[in-house]
Length: 476
Image 1: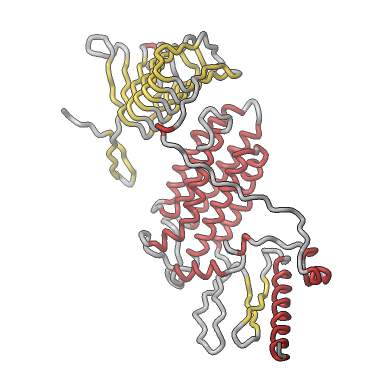
Image 2: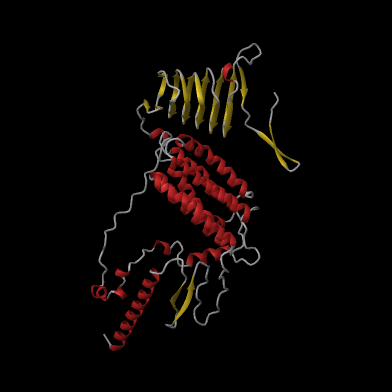
């Protein structure tokens, strides 16, 4: 090898070592501090680029015209308030989730990522003009949020409704949809609606644990605090929808590209933090060996979760009827018209799930009954202290001989509720339910049963600035 070639190779190695040394120094700098990065340019010299949370434009080659500057001013008040929400309410919820552990803690990590993705989106809105809501660019801007929100709901699907933490996961799965406010014309109302949906399951958790383990109650309250803080934030900064930078903003595509190029974005966030003992420029002995000693061996990446089988391919599970503490569990019965629960007690609750073409008879007075994901299941009971919950069940029939305070029907299609003359003061709540009728004792023309359909269609109108809802009645 000639002398000039050796000289060039030696020079190149020195430059590479200098660049590596500088990058290792940057890895040791706390993420919250800005830093100056030496960036090579074609003529062999370097230029300094200030790295911070603001969006920066790439350095232009020597002799080329510089691109328009997209360096943003200091973070807006809306971003500062959103950061405060993440650092207080969201962090407290995550900490309490870690105390509960298991899938609750795992779900909270995804919630944390949901807010991080929304923070990125809001950062872009402060620097860019709004793209068309139907454009591919807009979908690209929100795809990160959409992916994480979906992942939060998928955590719940790993449990069946009788699991101890099913209501916990449902509380968050329903409430996290509040983050979709960014595509709603009335975002504050949207957040409020999702808070109410979350409260359905959260209140059940607090009722169950209020006299047992207070940390579950505190956990629910912490998540409700997140939703309340989010609603207050939206009312303050985005009352009529997401506020974009229409006057001075750049194109959203350029803002997205510039944000991706900033250190600390999704690419650099995956880099491993290097300990000082592993930095070659601080340990000359490592340069001799040209290898850093391994502290641990990286394990294999986990395999992707298996896909769900279609319903007709799932193996049938054995029927189960047992008393676990104060809870009766009845599940996986099929084509059995004589499932009988012996004399139940007033403190007992009953969970019925995954039954098909079954008749269940319950003797005595119990606390509450929940029927979930059943088909053609008929239930006959005497009296309840709390009420009956029917969830995602089709073609069901419920008959209560004596008193029942409340009946809640959610996500069902086709059902009949028989109410005896002693239970006429019942309150019935329905949501996302079709084909549901109530049979009332001694209310017919001849003193027999009278069938009353539960309205499915509502007409909404605006009167004096108020939204007025009325039931639509069809003649004939």
